[in-house]
Length: 180
Image (cartoon, rainbow, N blue to C red; front, side, top):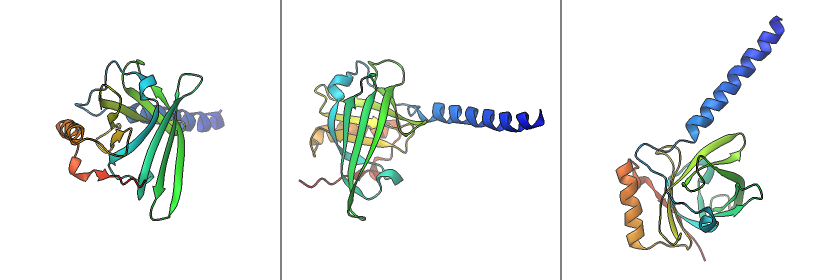
């Protein structure tokens, strides 16, 4: 009986910790609101990363793109690609995204390393789905995306002002280079 307790207790605690971590990791930053009336069909396709905060998974990357396509089960396939200019090689990562609540709200969770999920919150998008502002689970993660390798100054300012109001340190953004 003692052996069973030695196994069950750590496994149970580990499972609870994983559930708690995943609940925390799919949050939306305080002050941020996901887009209502979100249409995943319009969002699918290729996006170019215009700006981001530096973090280890995209360190030293330029020419970064994200390609979203629908899986048969209704989830979204995520293909992230970028060129590591230090190692001089292309890298890609395949993940999956699912809606957190409603399919008409831009709140998704994404995983590249199951069972760990992270928040992917579309907090601003233009009416033609050409430019998007995406927040992660905390103020450490923010992306500005575009269907092309550039973004109009008016959209850039709109997104930066919104991010600043939420609490993002936009002066720390990395502006991604794209080589044609």
